Length: 348
Image (cartoon, rainbow, N blue to C red; front, side, top):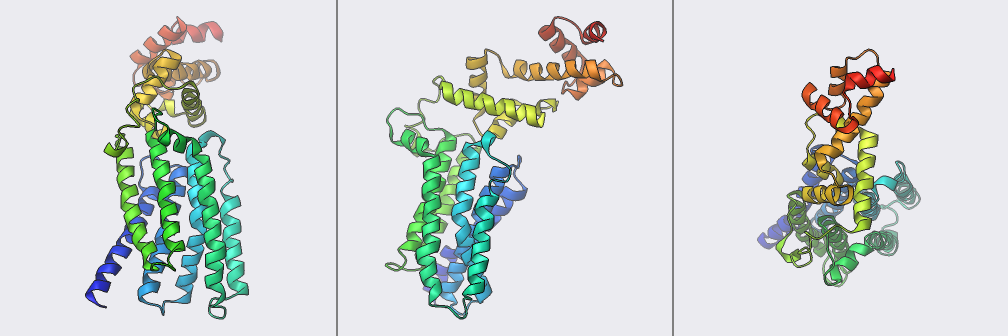
């Protein structure tokens, strides 16, 4: 391979290989694993496989047909996983458990059926038509659907004086990045097939940079103007959404029972900055994080005091998330006006 080809191979492949590493990280090593992270991991995986296939096919045309078909299946899954990640991230409480199957299973089955009816080895002339007309159209449809899901984020971005959250910046960057990769592949007939792989490397590192800022809860300098209103009061509908997700998180997962739970932990689960969660509680509920979480713990303690006759009062306090007996008694007395022992005696 010529030196210039080696350099081209390196820059077009490095993003794909690092995309695989990031895919593994999102799937297995993030602190709070959830469905959205798995969809993001899958998106990075199928994008990386598609790019790797492109790179090797460009430099080694005699590539195994099985590997080529795996790359095409990955291409068919890019759009669905992008849409599922965006949809899950923006609609956490309404996202049904098996919703993703309706998008992934039919896509995989159709790709297997087409390969069975039109094997790549025998119908080489069919596959370029199928890729350009069907796969790229399906990919584009999902990009458009993802854009529709975050249309309010796009509106906030272009409207002067409108606040853009870190989550919105991240989702916009991801959708636009995937759209740019789609354009690079779609126009490869006018440029070069390797442009798609090169564009992925560029987009991958840009998105990685934005993700780094997102994890640090800081705003990149090029979005500073849109986020200068971050200290203003949170809008009513946005605050309602945050509080609804917060209550769902506590009621379904019982997260408040963790003795060492911190405000930052909850903010990470909700994917919002810590100061925004604190502001939301203070402005809309008139209480701090400590009072809010203690209300859940005391409510649970009341239930256990009435229904559980095997545990001591102190043990119940620990079960509900209080670190010590003192904090349990003080919180219970402040919120109910009586002690745990007296409450149990008067109600059993």
